[in-house]
Image 1 (cartoon, rainbow, N blue to C red):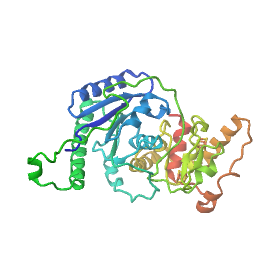
Image 2 (cartoon, rainbow, N blue to C red):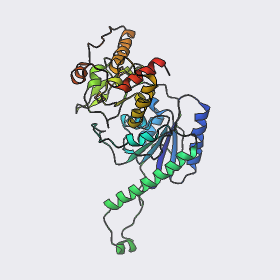
Image 3 (cartoon, helix red, strand yellow):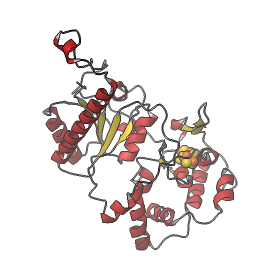
Image 4 (cartoon, protein in one colour):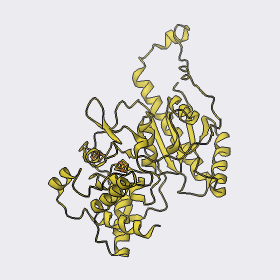
Length: 346
Ligand code: SF4
Ligand code: SF4
C-alpha cells in the first residue's frame, strides 16, 4: 500500500490581521480532524530564513505537500523551489473568484519555454491562495480532493514499480505487502513553528518561464544575481536587493521575476492569464502611460544607486541586450499599466 498521508502546511499572514488569523485558525482546526492529513503552521513563507525552524520543517517534508499561504500560488511555489523545497507543480481546482470568464481562455496552457527547475523529486506541491475565499470549508474540501488525487497517483506508481508476486507466496507468509516505513521526520506534525520572522525582500525566479537570457544579471548593479556551475541564472545574494524596488522584474522579457510582496499583481506573481486580463481591463481605465517599463526600471535603479552614494547610470549600463533585441520602444500596455498603478500608490 502506498503511504496514505499528506502534509499540509499553513503559512501565516504577516502581521496580526484578526480576520486572516480567524480564517487560518478555522482551516487548521478543521484539518486537524481530517484523517490522513498532517497539518503544521509556519510564519509567512517569504520571510523564512535558512535557520528558521519553519523553514527546516518544510525542508524535512518528503512526500506530497499542500501549502496554504497569503501569496499567489506561482510565487509560493517558486519561493519553495528557491529554498530547495522542490516538487512538481500540483494543479489546484480552486478557481480564484478574482478571475473572470476570460481567464479560462487565457489559461490555455502555454507550452513551457523556461529552463525549468533542477533536481525535482518525484512528488507534487500544491499551493493554495488564502486570499481567494473567506470560507475555510472551501480549502478543507480542496485538501481532501488533493489527498485523494495524491493517493491514487502514488498507488499507481507503486503498482508500476512493484514486481508481481504470486499469491501463493503471500499466502505462505514468504512475502508481505507491508506499507513502506514513513520517511524520518525532524519534527512532529500538528505543530506550530511560529518564532517571528523578520521581513525580507528579494526576487524569486519562476524557472518555468525563465529562458536564461541574463538580462537581469546585466541590469542589476547590486550583485543580487549570479550563475551556477551550469551557467544557469540564480538569485545569489538575495539580501543585496533594495527593499521595495522591483526594477529587474520590469526588464525581464518573460515576466519570470517575482517580488511576492509587491503591490501590483503582475509583479507579485499573479497567474499569467490573469495578468493578461488585468492589462485589458485596467489599461482602458487608465488610458495607458507615457513611460515604458524599462524607463521605470531605470528610474528605480538610479534611485537606489544614489541612495547608497553611487552615481546614477540611466540607460547607459546593463541594457545592451534589451536595446539590441527589443529596441527602445515601449514594452507593452501591461508595463504602462504597472507604471500607472505605481504612480497612484495603491
Ligand atoms: S531576465 Fe528573466 S528570463 Fe532572463 S535570465 Fe533573468 S529571470 Fe530569466
Ligand atoms: S530589484 Fe534592483 S537591487 Fe533588487 S535584484 Fe532587481 S535590480 Fe537588483
